[in-house]
Length: 205
DNA sequence: CATAGGATCGCCT
DNA sequence: GGCGATCCTATGT
Image (cartoon, rainbow, N blue to C red; front, top):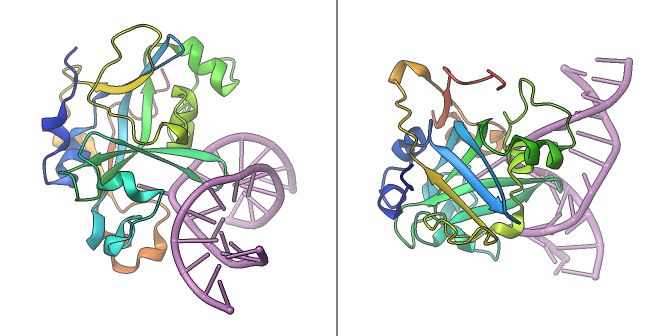
């Protein structure tokens, strides 16, 4: 299946990209273990003008520095001291847009996902939260900065990348809501920047 | 240096 | 619906 390339991520409309990521396949390979899932939920974070963004008002720190890199870079950070949350940086270098991936439907490598999560089987709601999917796919905050537009060449190389599996998502299958857990962002908390792909959501496996 | 709090989850009631 | 886990980051002294 075709790899999603730089041209997809470096576009300027982070909201359009967040919608466009629904139905795409998110794939990881670590220690020769390949696992993947179809993206069913995303949130757009619009950089320096968006109070909900870690880069609001142009803030830069060791953690957020990767947000200013070129679109197609991974931004993974630790939340509540417990969960690694996976984001995709978008736009050109210097513009800190990002998209939080909030849900997937498990596809390949279910045995590895079960192993990582300590579950016996893949049931409904197995990977329907941002912290759950990173755990299932083995994504850790140490993976921040990875280039998502490069697929590992060898079986034992690590990588995170996305592929277009030809899943066409209709407008009426997308539910649009405000983002979760950003109450502190004032008016920006009301922005309709969360996208949920309904046809596939909550089907378990 | 100290400390509050967070783009969450799972278990409890 | 409530709460504790758990630790890094940002901010302030």
